[in-house]
Image 1 (cartoon, rainbow, N blue to C red):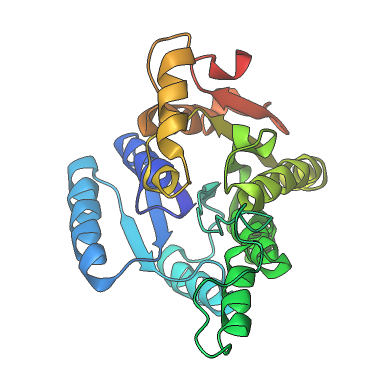
Image 2: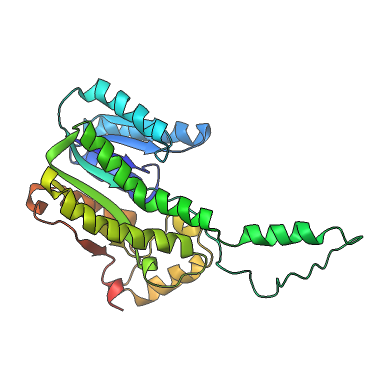
Length: 280
């Protein structure tokens, strides 16, 4: 049995790779990393595979590019043959823009550094680039939401899915609340929640169960990029009913549970993995 993890080099994706490998599942792990970062990651995955007695295939490939997706399908087929074997497709891609919708207060178009009157246009263009554009929203939404649909369709076309397969995405509380600089990601996560509902219904006939996991505030590389993330960490530690922040392994544990036979009747759900944080 195999799991395909999109975005498996850190955070929730990597924690899930480690959890599933420990339970005997083979993994195809897609990520985008520099050569230096990939070297240590591949060593870690190789050691994990040996320790757990499973196959872990690393793919330093752009999961958001059609050519990258097609290349993966070709390489994967060479390894697994014609067998329907993918039990899980996990979408854990965290790539997007963290910009405000409006120019910050005080940036009203007045240029304090005008020498010879030739700098106003340049500074205006710079300010325009600092606010969220429709293109930014489109790119973020595809990366963190609708690319999941392309991957599901591609795996179905190749007949890779197991008859009782699971599709899991990751949403967040920020889909419904204001977080500074999070607008594009919030839009993407809200889109993902709607998409998952329709996928649960329309892909159910293929045996796919589509669910989302909403993790609590978790210290991951992605969180640290959000403006004001320190405040989110402080708030989470203060309000969580169980007295601590969510950890990547907490999320990985639930993703593993959703892959079990006993979870085969869970479809179209958003599952909170936050120690009750969402209740407050």
